[in-house]
Length: 263
Image 1 (spheres, rainbow, N blue to C red):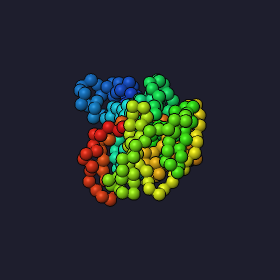
Image 2 (cartoon, rainbow, N blue to C red):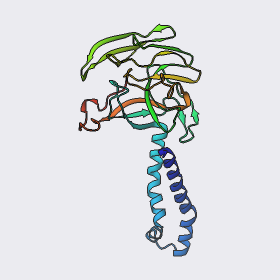
Image 3 (cartoon, rainbow, N blue to C red):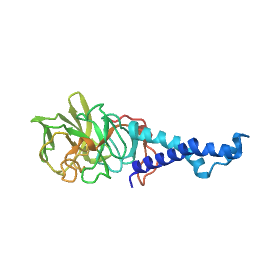
Image 4 (tube, rainbow, N blue to C red):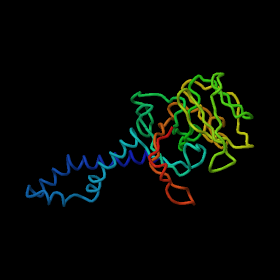
């Protein structure tokens, strides 16, 4: 069930009930019981009106924050390792790429566009009820090539600089690397002995090509189920980890990751 829709409906209903009571019913109650005191007026309110008056400001605040500013997400898998780990809880900047109306997702104010290297949350084109998180690799019009045998990425014929740093400290079967997009750098992982899909992909206008940082363990734009991400499916840019919990069996928070910015 769409939480955004539920939040909008709940905010609308509580607001209507509160407004109707304030503008019409409250006046009728005053005429009925006289002007003897506010306590009598308050006591005569129904439970529904009381709840609506209490919850509407809270729901409205949550709706504004979640729809236009920041929305929390939990990382459910290891496809973005080592940048994001399973059990990380992150904040996503909802206004980084423009303000959109909740539920209908219509853009009402242009602010910016996704840039190469951004870590983004988006709605899966083949199933918009599912949110994915990946890194933007290709911009509209780019030609992206991934050589699966050499694990080499190139954009518009230019090989993306990649420095391999050695074995990943938490798993010797994984190789840690540092990739560069201009003056932006991020780490990624390759799996020894595993080949992930490759090929050449021409990014359509208004779309983006995304990949996971765990290159051999990520269902991303190299797969038909994901492919190119329309701009209107972008939810926002991942900006910070606000909590990290070893998930689901090891238990306990990862204190060093809390508050870490997402590069």
